[in-house]
Image (tube, rainbow, N blue to C red; front, side, top):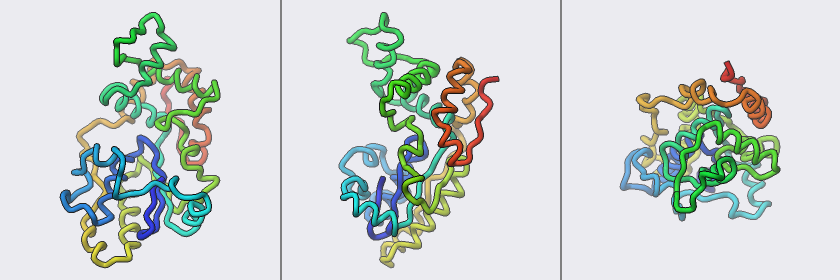
Length: 248
């Protein structure tokens, strides 16, 4: 979670729900960045590599101070349909991005005869990732932040959130939040400097993970899809998502 004592907000980051662009936007809203004019221009390394001198994590504060801020600040998070979010994780961490390390764990667990210590990256199938997530949950382990249920990350039943945006309506929801944050900036000069800051717009040129749902889940056993529904049951109930028909 990130917070700002001047603007008085708390943002609970949910992985694979536009979190990189949210961090970029919050950094730009500080008014301290002059080298770039738009959030999307901020390099990924500048956004994710510590230390980040523009936005601060809430966990550095004592519990009492965290709770005081939750009771007073504008608190928000963004969520995403759970099965689509898992597809997005697979595409970015196992197909397109740099090695994530979990691929090695999956191969050692399900294809031990193929494991070789000299190999730094393996191709795993989406079905194997689903199986791994379910097995980790069944074993009682804390799930990776990229596929843990979103309610377990942000605990909306414990903390009050003023706004819960959806990835499916990201453009409109993000505009509302950015306008809200700008209106809360007390310093006139800062408010003027960030007047043109907007949440990065989707170019519309890339296929979304939603487009891949049927394709990606085609090889996932129906029993595993049902188990995913159970794993994310609270997310579906709390955030109003409907189960996508991915089992044919």
